[in-house]
Length: 486
Image (cartoon, rainbow, N blue to C red; front, side, top):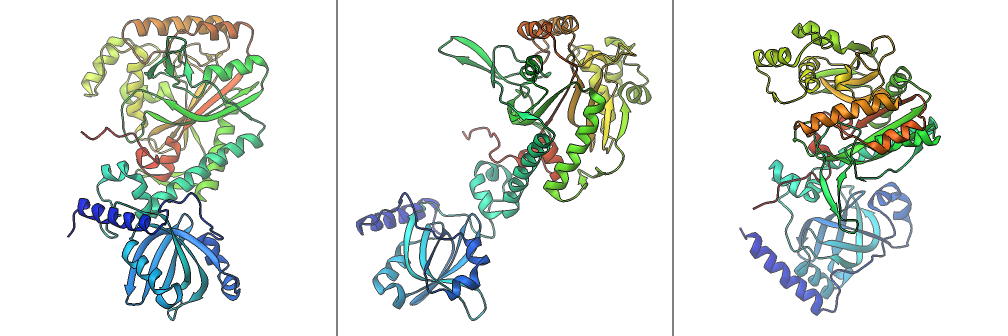
């Protein structure tokens, strides 16, 4: 069997032959008249017509039989068969094709449609043209790309050999377009906010840092979908806004986490978290139905039915029942003692809020959902409004599906003095080494001092899509970040 280098060398000779024949092997355009899908759909009509059509695509199979040859070729809409006959295309042209075209080449075929004796829809080639000469061979059809790392590195080949992977991204496009339509139909305005920030905020996460040469300042890639910017829009008098875009967090890789990913966040003036929960439940059902045609899913061994009643789970009660710790009265020492006892990895230097949240994350693993987590302590919710009846907790909610948090919302904190105090507390945590604590955004606090109406905010990432697909989130990214090969 020839090596890759030998195959490439042979194809370079064929490329040279094509050029010597006065043919451009990489033309800028084609004369395609129909996609393969159109040729299949309108086959009967096109076959009856005497007019020639032009189809294009990548050669996937090439079967020469003396003076005739069948090929399978594929464009972005489907696969089709072509029949080359020496006395139709001409002996010289036919031999040129057999000698210089390979599986993997892109080809343009002009001809008429007919059915073979076996009933297969086929185009009878009258003429043909090279559209792009491939220098490297496609993997063998049956072996394909089996190694996961190789699949992710060469995703362009993964799409060719695994149609089900391509289907993921057709669904993903529907997922985001249906969410966009839902929000627009509810009167939300799509906005764009800065991806580069002087002060990053809106989440507890470690940001990526870059440098702006013209201004000679360090900047951060945003860690939220413009949360503090969209709140400024609430100050400015916008009633309903949302943004769908990329955000970046310099954190670990897992089944649920990426470093750059797509997120949606909406902000709804004159609404609170109770109204937000109703809207979010409606949105999740709408998007799931539009994307997958069902509300029932099997997600990592959890059976989840979005049409069931969405329960409310109290944060304090869940931790108290499981670990006998009252999150509103506990101390850092007590929580560390409990984490050590149950052998859960943690950083003793982390804040009390961060340590408490580790306990909660043990509780959530057993919850199939759909459910809303409510009653979050102020310690873990620096941007949420305090509850009017219990100042120790906030008006915050998180969607729980298959043992994980899949969406986060609040009645947004609009008291500028309370917000300034919480930012100061977060700044102390950063000074003590908590790289995920939030920065003190003085400009945002100033904006709040001009007055922001009661507002509900909510964010959900593409983690929701990967969960509904029942797949590792990396599998649901077209080109996931990979460590460079050495």
